Structure formats: C-alpha cells, structure tokens
Length: 126
Image (tube, rainbow, N blue to C red; front, top):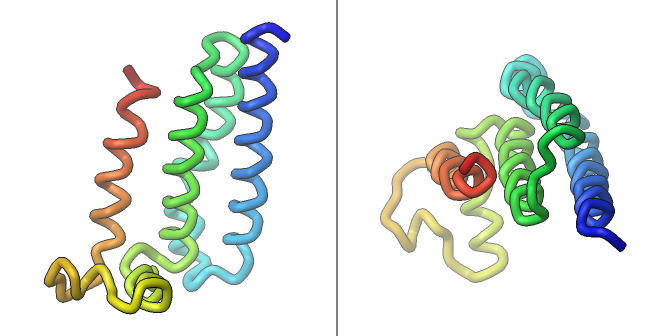
C-alpha cells in the first residue's frame, strides 16, 4: 500500500468521523441562528479541504489536528461558545471543575478553542 493510498484512507476516515460529529451536533443546537453563523467557516473550509486534498494532500497528522479542531468548534457552535458546559463535564468526571482549578469566574470555552486554533492548525498550515 502506498503512502498516498494510506493518506487517502485516513483522510476519508477523518471526513466520516467529522460528518458524524457534525450531524449529531446539528440536532437541536441551543440557538439555530448562531449555529448557522458559526458554521459558515465549516461550510466553506471542508469543501476547500476536499478540493485541496487532490492537489496538495496533507499529512495524516495534519488531518487529525484539523479533525480535532473542527470537533471542538462543533461543540462550541452546538451550545454557543459561552454556554458549553465543559466545567460541569469536568466536575462530573474528576470531582472538580476547570474553573475552580484555575480561578476562573466565567465560561472560557471560547478562549480554549482559540488557543486550540493556534495549537492544532499551526502544523497543517506550515
């Protein structure tokens, strides 16, 4: 199996995984209008990535990082970034919330995703 074939399969797996996440989180978002607005970039970038894949394929690491970012973005767009219950999720899993650990007073999911934007997309863009 060639590297190109292996990358094609991995890119397809990433596309299918994102499609599933996207469809699940498109069901009853907190605010449909906000969800549509926040997904404009997804509606433009996913087709662009598909077109780019045939002319300038990315590495498997790049596709994985893009998938991770898009999934965190979809969670934010489903709830709206300011209402993502990440602190409640962390408290139920670990007994303490991220806000308590870091002394935060508000929901910082938007800042977390902005940080991940830089962290996850630096490698593919380079």
